[in-house]
Image 1 (spheres, rainbow, N blue to C red):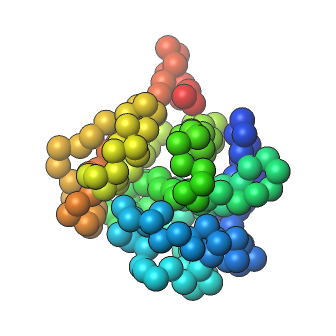
Image 2: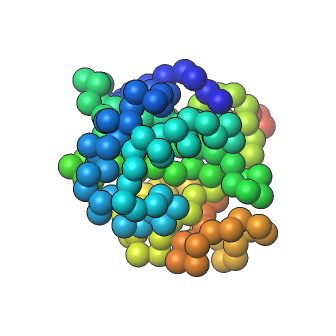
Length: 176
């Protein structure tokens, strides 16, 4: 797991701790943020969810997304699926939708992978009706997969996407 804070232009991504449960409970008070995230059971139990995420060692990044002021605005994780594929996922407080924060947080995490020399493709599963996230993934170089990877175990309404590392002309990996 990566325990370092990540910096983005307007954001800090801070490793999640048990103390973040109350902040995430406030964000999740609006159940509409989970409309397209079937993996998070409703009603949202922040304490239980935070304990399970913190205990899951398959997640390399499990960070609370905060404004530079410290205000919590969401959550981002980069973990492993059951089949071993890397997958990125996130949620944001509704008040912060449409401001580019999800894209900024995702690019920060993907940039860290590049800096670490991790050359594995990264997947993102998005609900077919979540048009905003579908557009955002395309803007970051993710491409839609026509079929599910073996043993990915994704819900049927999810569309899988993959982003291969961006390489420079010398064979190195670039962050986008």
